[in-house]
Image 1 (cartoon, rainbow, N blue to C red):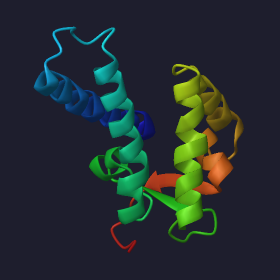
Image 2 (image 1 turned 60 degrees about the horizontal axis):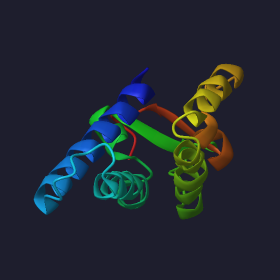
Image 3 (image 1 turned 180 degrees about the horizontal axis):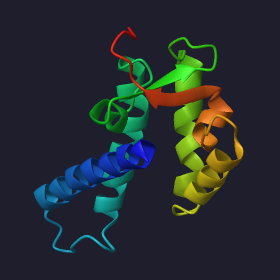
Image 4 (image 1 turned 90 degrees about the vertical axis):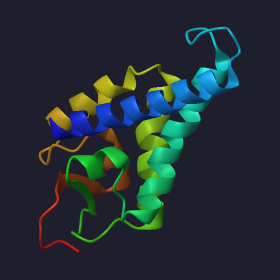
Length: 135
């Protein structure tokens, strides 16, 4: 449940930043068919998935806000390669399928014994609540 809240928070923040950027450029086209809004939304969200985790030990903005952490399956902090795998193969298919890939991630989470979604499965990581003594 917290994973869904974390993803929702990331999408809301990315949407707000994209809306502010679109208003700042004031094309007069609104938001729905406006390519500036969607370009800003996708680039902001991808930067949330790549830049923040690289500097926050694999944690995304939503994970930081909901006190979750990503760990490698061996219990250590995810390495650079795992962070990139989580971002590219975890979220990339979601963009390409207009969000339908979230269902694959949910099904993967239900099938996997550890409850890992698609992004965790392909990057050999696990998302869990951040312990106070971790770090």
